[in-house]
Each structure stands twice: as C-alpha cells, then as structure tokens.
Image (cartoon, rainbow, N blue to C red; front, side):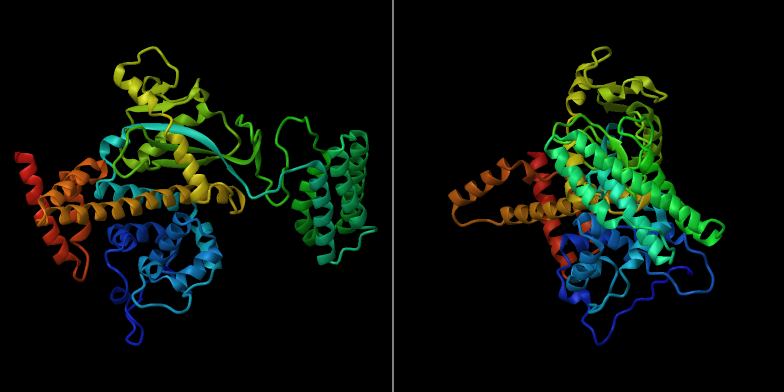
Length: 501
C-alpha cells in the first residue's frame, strides 16, 4: 500500500456539509482545533511510498478512531451512524454529504494493526494539546499526578476446566475436518454431555462425580491429540497448521487448578491473565493490568488522562512506576514534580523516590502535600468512566497488541469526550453572559437575572476563558466570526469594568 492521499473535493451535485450543519456545534469546533497535519505525519510514517492503491486519508482514520471510543461504538455501529450523521462526516474531513461508505469496515482493523500503540499515542498527545489551547488544562496540572492500576478485562467467558477441555476437543475436531484429516473418533457428543454434567454435579456439591467427568474429558482430549499427531506426522504443511492449537490443547489438558505459573484461560486469547484486585464482587478478573495517570489538581475541563498503558505479565505495581512516569514525561514534555500513589506501590522503582507520596504516609508531609494526598481518590471515577463509557470494560481486540491499542484509544476517547463537554459549556457561558448584558425593562427582573448568574459557579467568566474562547471561535467560517466578535467585545468590556470595580 502506498502513502495515503487525501484528494477529496466538493461535489457540485451533492450538498456541501458546511451549508447544512451548525458550524457552532461542539464537534465542528473540536474538528477546527485538532491539528490534523501532525496526525497525518505520524500515521503516514507507517506507509511506504511506491506503487499500489493509496491508503485511506489519515484524517478519516483518526476521526473514526476518536468517534468510536468517544461514543462507545462498535465498528459496525460506527459505520452505520457515519452514513446518517453529517457531523461525523464533517469531523472526518468530508466536504460533501456521503450516501455510501467510502471505506470498508475491515479497513479499521487493518489500520489499527498497522499503526500500533506507538503511533496511536499521538491521539492522547493531541487531546492534551487541544485542552491546553482551549484553557481546559494548564501546564501546572501536568506537574503533579496520580497514578493507579486497574484491570482491562478481555472478551472471554469465565474459564472452567470443563469448558476449556470441551472447547479444545471441539476446535481440534473442527480443524481436522477442515483439513480432511481422518480421526478415529470425535467424541463431540460425549464431550458435550460430560461438560454439562460437570457443571450440574459441581452445583449440587457432588464433587467426586464432577471430578470423574473431568477425567473423562481429559482422557478423550488426550486420545484426539495423539491421533492427530500420528496422522499429520511428516507433513510439514499440516504440522504448521495444527502446531499452535495442539500446543494449547496439550497445555489445557496438563494444567492443574493449583499450579503456579502461566495458564491458558481462553483458547482464542491465550494471552489472558488472571488478576486478583481484592474486589468482593469480582475476586478475579481475566485480562491485563493497565496503568492510568491523571492530574492531582482540578483542571477547568475535567480530570484528563495523561497516560495510559497496558502492562502484561501481571507485574507488581511498584515495578511499573518508573517506566510509566518516564513515558508520561516523554508524552507531555513536562517534568513530574509530585506523584501520588496508593499503598500497592510500596517498594517502587522510581529513581526520585522523594517525589513519590504514598497514601497514609506521615513523614515529610506538609499541609499542601496533605491536601494533595486527599485528592488521590478522583482517579477512581476516572477509571470507572474510561471503562464504562469508552470501551475499556471489555476488550474485543485480538492479542497483546489489541490490549495495548484499546487502552490508548479508550484514554484518547475519554479526553476528547471531556473536550466536547468543555466546548459546549464554554458556549453556554458565553451566551448567558451576552444576554446578561442586555438591559432589561424591569429592574427587579434584571437584578434577579444578575443574581442567578453570579450565584452559578460555572457561569463565572475569567480572562483565561475569554482568551481561549476567542481562539476557538475566530477560525470558523460563516456568520460565526461576526457573532463571536460582537459577543467578545461586549464580554471583554464587561470583564474590564468588573476588574476595575
């Protein structure tokens, strides 16, 4: 595939998007603030110049990834809504309304695999850059952070010995039939009944009978493994096809409940790990560990995710702190001054150990640090929102690469969702302040309006918000610049009078 090429242009026979949509919509304003050229440079670096069909425009690819995780949509649902929603099309760089998809759904999978975690991190960087330009977050907010870990569950069924043995038998028999390898006996009907009876006996606390059924399944799986190995012996093509599945089936057959070391919890996702976080409702979760970093302060736009990374191998939390902080400083370009963590990070490997503050610590704790330590808890709702609303609660992407990609995209979708709300709230504040400045005939009603506005903490207009809002509106096309100039001239005069008084 050659370098992506964006040669989209307006169609004379199709309606132009900027003529049928509201140019003041938060999604349109967000599209005007994102630096698509930087994303184009990062995403185009994975493609080689040469012959072949050009790839999809990088703005289309980046816009699809942002919309997918910002609104918690699957690939299929996103493609269906993209045709219906002109704002989605404008956000992805279309100039005219499209009645058909200009891409195939599988292109999103190919681009995810092609980009990887290293290039997709640019979406988190760009979200923080837009937040800084709009005044939603400041440089001081990046110096003091909170780091915590959670589990990103994989899309697997709850693993049991009977289920894994039955699935191994089913997959081996199916693969043998597809490759026309004759087996002596398939045991499909008997294996299914044995798996069902194992669950019934376990539920009835008849564990001796349940163990007998498990032994039956292990014996039949061993027979099928040995039979297939005899039939494909000497055929290099068939040995290459059956090798990975035979290895997993042998590991499932030999693994024990109390053994130490890695286990197979899902045949289609052997990278899944069992992680115990001590939750009463879920003592064990099956997926991979994820590190999340947020500001310890309260930025104006919300608690943004500064860094997100999947950590395979179920490492000790303290051993992940050093690499995580190094990656975050490289991503944000700001040196971290204070790091607040929970007691699970005791014995960490961060080189500057006096910059790390563990919850419950008493020594060297000043009044300001104590206030910051009380702010460590807001990282928990951030993790909850990222998991529940941005597709990190159940990862459907394949392999360890899919774990890392889904973590980065979920964090980027969360940040862009905060930016959407920030831009919408900024517009509401501007409109309310504009109508407050209009003289009213009834003085009592005017005083009531003035009082209701000043009592609202969100309605306070500051000089920083005015400057950032001017930056957001002046680049828009159509009647928005004229309206914005009238609004801001009036607002700046009112703000200057308040400062002088």
